[in-house]
Length: 576
Ligand code: ARG
Image (cartoon, protein in one colour):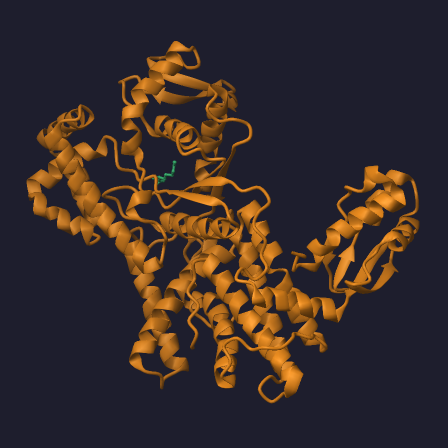
């Protein structure tokens, strides 16, 4: 099928023209087709090519225009400045492309050219510890990427790399025994932090308890059945709580996606022995170390990954090494994404480089750290709750819903309570997610609930409302799927169509760069173009073919906003 996106549709035309005008060796040059405020599309290839050919760029541009066969697509080409091509596209082509998008289930978005098996390691909270805002970021970003890559046709393997193993479980299990097993209920309702803190303080102050805890770690590692049973109780209770948070957020993670640190436990000893036997890792001060080329301490000495600690135990690095090996060797991943905070950058770079050095991460498997910045309070310091503790995620979400309820109440006092409640949830949760996704992922952002739940500005509520407006017009017209043809004649119609047609390219760019804020920016622009169209072009009052065309534009806008929000994991209610 001819691409919906005019820039993509033009690519083969440029390849032909470049070949004809300058020889086949130049056919592959990137024509650099871009949106521009001077034209529908601008093409910048003549500048670079001129340099290569030793010809004035304007002359190159002229030869290129002569060789181009684009009459069906382009109405007018002007050569501007040093040799830009400014192109005005044909309205009938734009209209027909928009019609094709509207008739297509996928809005004309093509599948990715090369389909991957993508492992996405995200959320990954720690058992018996409160999820903090960092886990919120991982959960929201990872879910958006999983949805987007899935939409592009890739196979998605979600991996919730739960922190469910290690020395703290000694004291946690002993604390559970002290309280009685039924105390695990408090963990499942979200009293994780209190439970952990109480265990910790006993561990620090009561030598008897500390001793019992240490012994308990030994039995846990030794696979003692009773200890494992108690451990399971804590893991289950925590998972129940995490699932509650996921349900509230609308996160797609399910129990089957959990593949926590404990999963790798039986693999660590054999892995360590293998690396030692094959001479890939060396004993250094009692610890088994994997020296990864290129990584150094501040003093210049080589910095190793600790595969096995001097006391024989295994840590975070060993598990992550085993994780890469499992994901490639058994899950057959061709792309691995690990969604964790930027401070873990060096650790992950070493894990990836170390895995390559050990031979279980082939060159053609892409491994990417999807890093993100910190969440700051309105005081620009690390985000904390009012009491100064690290905030409980579930409280934040509920507070966002409460504030959204107040906004909804203010704007639409007359709607029925049930609709109000569901709107408040959609807007509150959407507000948190959108604020997170719309900021450049690697940068810090300020968590400001007051701003997030507004319906003005670059917010989730603004986009949800922008989606509900064309839906409401379609309802009033009594047309869910209006028939007819899209013919953009007014300036605002053209601008809206051009924006609509670049949805696919935007989604594709998010799949490549793993930057959901590009999609947010796109949807925000789309909403702005729609609002201009709405102000300048009456829909319901128009007649005949003009009315049909505009109704179809409303339908395509609504569907594009809905699909875009859904890729971000944000609900798009039909009525607001
Ligand atoms: N549990 C870790 C944390 O809370 C995140 C784990 C991320 N995944 C990984 N494979 N290291 O920081």
